[in-house]
Length: 131
Image (cartoon, rainbow, N blue to C red):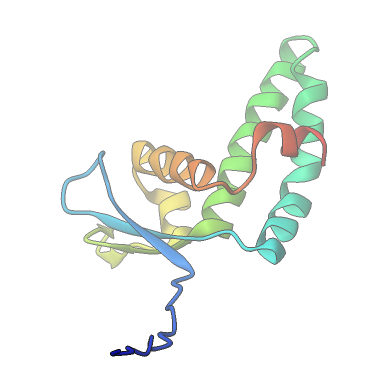
């Protein structure tokens, strides 16, 4: 009888996921994969903004504007928290970074990255509401 030994192979885990942009051809970006600690960190960062947003969406026109601002601030938090790197894009002659993307980058790419971070499982709507 011939016995074959199973070799123990170590698994390699990458803490980022790479995506090709659907918005701008040739651009790739890496976002952080969510760990328990990162989920806690993100939850703390967006908690106050999302609670304020829920309250303001029920108010008058001025409150509605505040709610829109809180939506934008949540998107900024997602980018700052979840975007690891961008390749294939320069902004005003400088290699793109999360900070440059928020400050001067194309809004459609920013929205794509935010949606990708959310889809990767960063925080569900229910988790944001229950934070």
